[in-house]
Image (cartoon, rainbow, N blue to C red):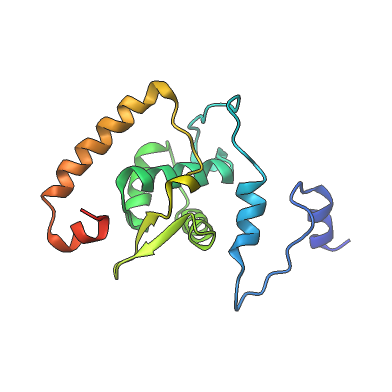
Length: 161
């Protein structure tokens, strides 16, 4: 039995995707990984474990939420914050892979000339912030906005200030 058939037989993301690497259709991947796992009000709260124990969907959520919170971020920014968030080793190649899928599925947009990323639309935000955490989230956003006001004009134009 070839590996493709074996994986297809046990995967809940059937059927296999025939992928054109010269002109990739990331919408297919997004539909499989993101859209087939809708969020419900009874969904379990995200638990931060070691990076290697996190499922891809959880990492999609964490990375998209991080970029949403920061307003804009580069891959290096994302890696920096994930090193602080996760105990132990993180895999930069996995971060790049997840960011690539988020960009390809139009959940993150590339902006500017220096590899900055921005959440494409709030309606596409994967994670939902719990009511009890919204105050902390808003305080972080407010603190970041005051920092951004002191940034140079090129940076401010990227974040839309």
